[in-house]
Image 1: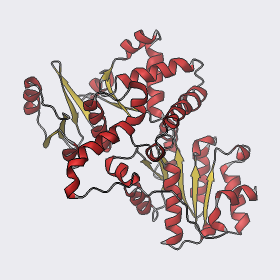
Image 2 (image 1 turned 135 degrees about the vertical axis):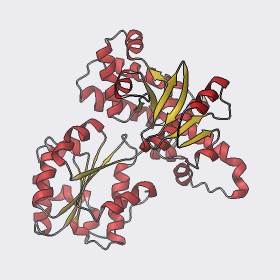
Image 3 (image 1 turned 90 degrees about the vertical axis):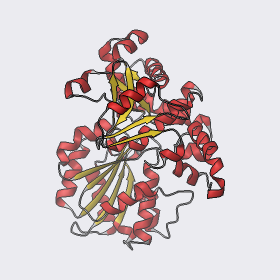
Length: 387
């Protein structure tokens, strides 16, 4: 196993200067803040959204700025076929033996694709309780992390990595805009709405990359993991979701269109949410209303949505962008007498998104009627930046 471990940890043998990796301050800052805690840190998010890159950049920071001994930093990708028969405990023990590191000596463990190991939650608990470790783990499955949380109650924190926002997109494209260039902001923002925020796709622009990503999620993460035999039905279902992005989705209507049972449609919807391809927003109201009312669907990434629907309906794409910006504020949508207002956040901010357009009179009346701590109408990217 020694050669495998060295292959994953080049900093053990010399200077570590990863090329082509661009930092994302929004996540890096959180990783740094968590470094001084005992918490197990879980990075979740869509496949290829940049979780591994963030971990490796953080490793560089630990070595360069925190002056952590490189041999006390261990990274491994647990989806490696050569490690199939080894438990996490066994792999970590081999690492400690290799460098003669005692259990009481602190080490930083970076465990990529943690869900590939059975009983990972119990193994992490064992490591947490019996060794001096700081653990960072990643997974592309929301359901796996949610279901295992009880085993790590009080020991873990979850950080979701989202696709690039507009400012990060400009950074990755190496585009700097001065105040004199403000007239170009809207144009570059439309480029962003077309491309989306998957880091590798932003840099390469290869449409085959997006196709391969979606196929991997549908055929490997969903079909194989959940034992769904009809993979084509899954893909058709996802196309339907992309066409409905930004709108409420009736399980019964989708089931009728797909000629499947409502239970199957609900299961498919949950699968796509669990792999971070879509997000579901409930209707505002009492608990019963939230559960029973149709949920609005938003795409995880504009580039993926455009692959399936074409680049159209910029207003809907803009609303999707705003949702991702406020996602951590747990928004719901308001629906009353056939009129809808886009978002009410948990801190009681009412938001209506109108990309270069106006509210109808009925919408305006409902918007004015609703009680909120703050009310915002967003019509442009310049206004969106203020969120």
